[in-house]
Image (cartoon, rainbow, N blue to C red):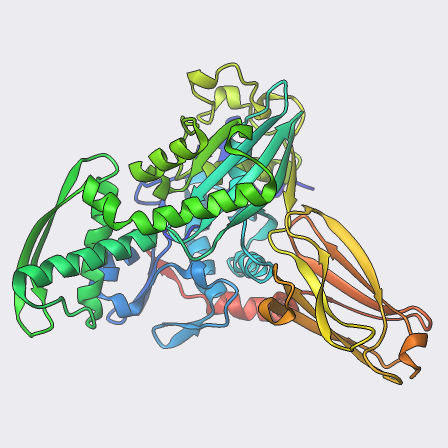
Length: 530
């Protein structure tokens, strides 16, 4: 691939996003215009000035103008929802494109050169539709997305864990809105994902919500009425205070809330001051912490791996700064998680390593970068310190299959084609017959999920083969071929072998934009303001 822009890696996060590059032979996290390494993944519209803000200023407006502010858009990627910005509405990938556009503009200003290509990360458990929507967001923002890779996989690339012997690594990635767990095998320059699991609706935001619930209970006990959270501004104030407390309790034993003039449901206002200790915080948030541990244990069990089989544990995501999380993971695995790198920026660094690979330029040596492992792991030979390029092998996050009819009963059932945690790229095929005699068309429905029941899995797309000459079903033969590329993008083809009639689709083809559609969506993106 011809290098058309600097290697760029982007961690498009639920709460915050990070962009990185390679400069002077070293990895570099690029600061935004405010000098911050993280940019809040928040978009806000100001009616008075007809301006759209992205980043810190948008996050600040979340309290004063919550109804005009969009947060946690990552949780909606792949959905058909629309979100208003002033008089216009945008799909989730359009909102994500604004965040990406902000990151890219700040990077271009700092680098003094255009950014045209990037690698973007997604949660390991993101579906095909969510991955495709993320890629589309990058295209709307005006860049070529060289590859979509999983966040835990990027973290392993950044850590550079290669040793002289095979090493098995567990990645626990708890972000603002998602939990990802991955088992990764690293040896001889190959980073191979063995399995993934997680929850795309569990993260630091759930901890914020529990702090808000505790705050509301405390205010009611003291003042006889609960905060009027039906007012979006009141609710936003409480959540902002909760986030601040959560962050402070990562390093402090206690923090104090000071909330003047809180509007209550009975119409009065209250001045509220209360101390929250780390122990109390641990108690009120025990639920989501235990849920992450249950997911981790179930994943290990299903993979046939015990905690003692794991050589290294990597913590990724800002939510892993919580001491309760660190202690729980240490207790589960019987070892301290690997340290020595910022969990907020590790994913962007790994994405940048993949960007180097995609552009066929040397990956910087870990020995001279800020991602070198700490002294307790100094005997490790960093993967990025080798002269050869590392190789990344990812896996399919969810089983992909097709709905077929039982030959005897005609009842529809789910036929897995490529199983969850199979290495990708991957391909396979299956033969089938029409549902009834003398059909001239056959409709094939593609599903993803782990249930044996067709109805319990998610329908991701469907297409029709035909017309073909009518025959008795026993005399007709169709072949279904499926291919999944390294980005997890799925292509399916059905063939009537007797007449060489074929029809195929790329799953979620509606995310493929024509040149005119792309120009329209790009032109409709509002100008951004800091």
